[in-house]
Length: 238
Image 1: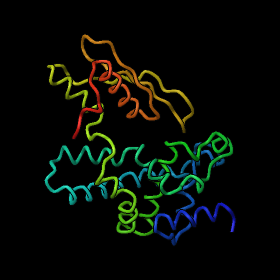
Image 2 (image 1 turned 90 degrees about the vertical axis):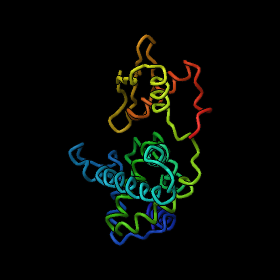
Image 3 (image 1 turned 180 degrees about the vertical axis):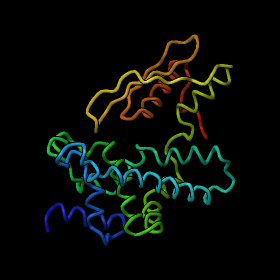
């Protein structure tokens, strides 16, 4: 058995699911950089499965939250959901799965440390969930998600109010409009972009943030403005 096959067998054991269709597992672990023929062949990468897995993850986590927090209102459930399905959490789960060694990457991406890159790990994690859903159905996907997300759901590691929500509440309390976000720049390659975003409020200089996604950059910009205004995110609880 090849080293790559061993890594993928180990991954199946780690997630508690054995694929009947190994091609699904192969596709879920294939980054666009490993595909020859250019962008037109990206369908052979994990991107379609990532799209599916993202939505399956949202449904399963929503169901788990609904039953686990029966006194929580819609707002709290939404904040908990956002925390559990964000890219950073998916990357953490991918590390717990030891997913990196099983990835199929192009040489340049592999040499650049792609197996440790949070965006790639997060996307592949979602793709893996999508592949389990196709191969084994909803119950199998739900079992994998519960295996890796249940403890995180019961013990969130960060405040449930993210910086964007906190900044909006802070602005509203002072009679200010909803903060506006502007994308200033997008740099880097298509598969590993970096966004620079500014957040704007009246009579205040903009604050900027960087991130591997537009959402992450917006959160960073909101956190920067809160810090500048003397608001500590560490002091805000759920």
